[in-house]
Image (cartoon, rainbow, N blue to C red; front, side, top):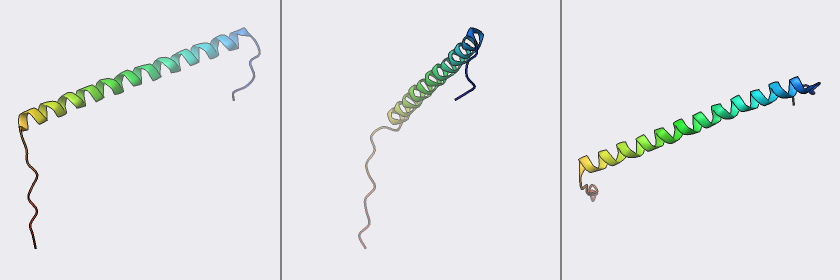
Length: 61
């Protein structure tokens, strides 16, 4: 843990630091969600453009 808090000004700066960290976490989470949604849409577009597929047949040796 960091140095002990000596007065309310230290507490205020700690509160601001924690708030900034939380904002960064929320922004990162929103960006991850956006990227996941874009990847899902891209996969759907790919599946629709490729159409019906069949598995390859195995060669018997």
